[in-house]
Image (cartoon, rainbow, N blue to C red; front, side, top):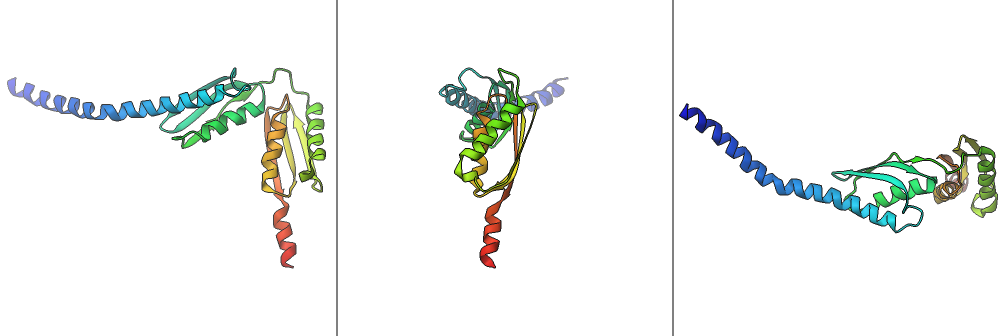
Length: 182
């Protein structure tokens, strides 16, 4: 019986010692996760639109999961951008739902998008197909500059009632380069 106790106490004490050595590593990881979460919350609270949002931020080893609801699609994009710009973040999954204050009016949304396309010189000369169904926006067209896609997405994201944005871009830059070579 004495021999058995010695054998069980040795592995237990070795395990306890090993866990004691790992404790600072686990604390550092937990601390880093909390630091990332707190930083994202702090930066979001500095934005007037994001301050009162119902967004939950989960962090584990550099992976950030965003959940909850916002009123504008722009808010969803802003939370994701803040997360990506945070030191220590390696991946972001944005599961935030857009829940507009007023139900989406697809005709109004489509007209506002068409006004954006007509009002900005960067979109002149391109053909664009705009479709809106239950606040879900799809724009297909020719873009002259890759940054125009992101610009359009940010403009559309500010429209009340937009719950998702999908832009299918055909770059005219490639076509311009082909015509130069001929």
